[in-house]
Length: 301
Ligand SMILES: Nc1ncnc2c1ncn2[C@@H]1O[C@H](COP(=O)(O)OP(=O)(O)O)[C@@H](O)[C@H]1O
Ligand SMILES: [Mg+2]
Image 1 (tube, rainbow, N blue to C red):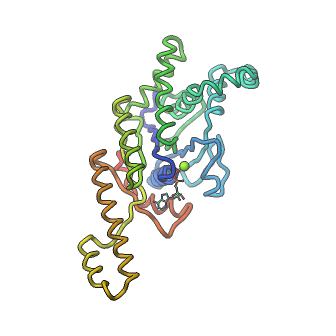
Image 2 (cartoon, rainbow, N blue to C red):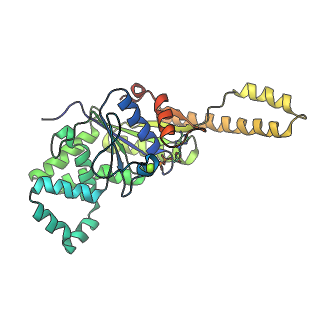
Image 3 (cartoon, rainbow, N blue to C red):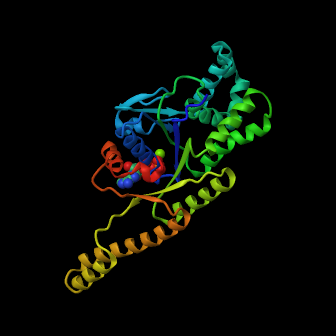
């Protein structure tokens, strides 16, 4: 039996574009809207732990009402998976503490990847420890590693055709491709390189998995003057105020670059959404401020 109400959301993108911030804002907003949410960082070390000054580990910690945070690493997910699957802790410990096995686990990253995805989809599949959330928001890996993450189940399912392992990985693979259960967001900046990475990933996800990822353009400068007003202002300032003129010209360049970037994005995902560059807020306030501006229905959530 599956829990048809649970949804898994992946947030990926080029390094530094704001994946963690955007993932946190989505989770924050969903919890405010009354949903039970877990925000999961896929990392060895939690980033939010420092940002929010709370303990974040493998087990969920409450951050706000209806909002838990956890940080998963592949090895711990694999250990948990085996404990549930093999069900004898001693055997699992033996397995993990054995040098040969340690080397094997290091050498077989697909196993860790599948354990991460297995845990992420465990609530929907109703296996393993209780995982009662409406929304599982995953602050996932950057683009390259994210591809590898999604490829892992398919690879293993092809290698292991029979038995429970093959069945489970096939089920995980299907859930990842099922838009009723999984959404993927690619965060980008309004700049050439992240947009190009975003376009490549979106195309690959569509052709390889049939996944229609949605694009979120982060850190858009909200310039209060349009190009005509900027031109008028620059004429007014010319010969009077050289630093004022420089600022206006600068904003004009930013405006023009953004316009081109948004045009490119429009061709990549006509339904892309934007989040603005915030200047005054940091930390939890930044997340709250972005959460206030995000409309989950625009993102199909
Ligand atoms: N919309 C935004 N406005 C202002 N600062 C932002 C915004 N989004 C992200 N940041 C900042 O940019 C930096 C990188 O964001 P982060 O979420 O850590 O990126 P990633 O997880 O992709 O590496 C952080 O310092 C974060 O606070
Ligand atoms: Mg991050």
